[in-house]
Length: 361
Image (cartoon, rainbow, N blue to C red; front, side, top):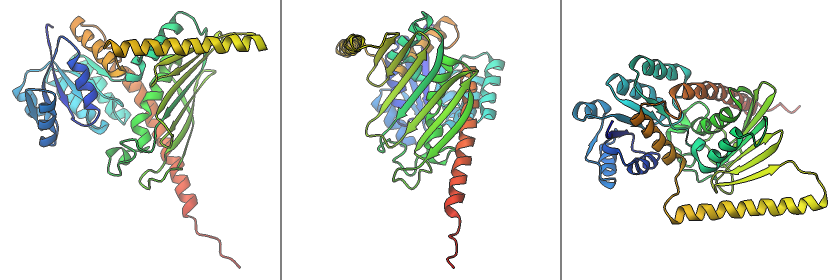
């Protein structure tokens, strides 16, 4: 494949990250965008200097010869669009979550197997610099056996989806959480393996009446190993933390600030506290200096950019995508179960608050 001809479907907020990433792939050429809203499609094509725009995938595929359909629509439409594209002879790239239901996820997996087209899923946090570093360190045995994974995904109340009363995410089972929970699920899977969902607790402490819940804490098991995911839309700042606990060491990752703290075994005394503090401060300064250099010299790559670059290479080299639709399917299985548990907790809360007050005698 000398050149990858790309068409992007769905010109909402997330599409900008994809378009920016594709512009950075030398052997890729964006030839069309698709959106149900013709004004948005045309505007996106003009901004990104893309030759054509359409209001339907069918119309676009009838008039344009493409190698890849990049799907950035709401997840409810992913399965139908992916199947349509693959059956028409196009490879597909799908934003997370791959689908909202196991039933739809199966359709994509089965179609990919039938057509043998390339199909990948954007699990972009796996390709953020500190997570790539942590993956490398775990493969080298730095942590020893990993016993626990802890993910914290914190957003402010100004989150563009949460703050928009009319955003499609609020109609999903699990609300805003159902759109973002794929991130902690695939991180935990990546470092621990296939997970069993434990308790899923949700609460509402924020001011948005249209959000049923805005705080979540969930537990997982992988054999005797444990994991936890905490998500909030009431944080004073956006933050993503990943802590990996092993028998030989601990890794603490700040994904947004792209820093990694390596905490090996130590003997606890007053002298070790000083040396350990100095070691951690040095690591933070080193990570910060590397980040400044990458940004200054144009070498910084986001998780989306890294994944799309690797996916493009899988098309060119005819190799397996970095995240397959089978991976996406397994994440959707966990996500669907979590959303069902969220709905049960919310229903119990609703019933409790709806009970009539006792009559005072």
